[in-house]
Length: 254
Ligand SMILES: NC(=O)c1ccc[n+]([C@@H]2O[C@H](COP(=O)([O-])OP(=O)(O)OC[C@H]3O[C@@H](n4cnc5c(N)ncnc54)[C@H](O)[C@@H]3O)[C@@H](O)[C@H]2O)c1
Image (tube, rainbow, N blue to C red; front, side, top):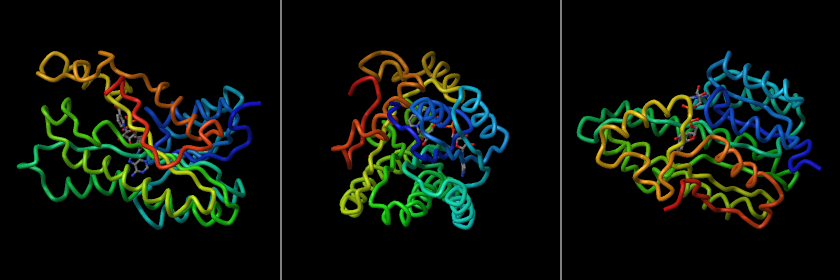
């Protein structure tokens, strides 16, 4: 039996990178997917990749930092699948800037992208999960929760680090609020992962920086997207049934 057979799983930010890898992994373990992203073509492509491997996936396009959009999309997902068993809050990112140059607009953009999206999507799945007394929420934090020598040295990542530490606090509190309803909440904190977007940036930093990504990782290598997807799948499955409120570092050591 596959580890997530017939569970309904939402993955946000599924058009590329870690979201795509997580989608393919969860589907390979039998989950039926609702995939969300702002990039309509990219998220359709991920759904097509899942279906080409014999899995089930529907794609929806929209901005998950927008309250009305989240209400609308999650209503459609519930109407289509009837319930949601797993939510992966994967949307996140950064516009890096040194703190003395950072505009309030860039600060707000980063907080909104990482934290508002996570809050809105989490709140939207809770009525169904609480009624059924079952559910599983996994959020993407980052090694940045304790600072990012590799990106902060280069361009400044304080807003992003603030958000990813915030994800840890978020799941810690949710654990107390939601355990009575049978809902588990965990986070995965990736180190530097060679996604299609980040790999060129990391390669460039290796040649320029005093603290390049690989030298800040005890295993002295970048991570691969499938290594994050494997950790998310573990937390989404019953193999982690006694784990909640944990941020799991998947970062090549610490
Ligand atoms: N790649 C890494 O090295 C790394 C390391 C640590 C943490 N993370 C975290 O993992 C997650 C995924 O990272 P990634 O590298 O795959 O990112 P990415 O930028 O490659 O992909 C993010 C996806 O989210 C979508 N998206 C962005 N804003 C959106 C919005 N408002 N509404 C809907 N969709 C939106 C994008 O279109 C894109 O498909 C993020 O939370 C990131 O902070 C990544």
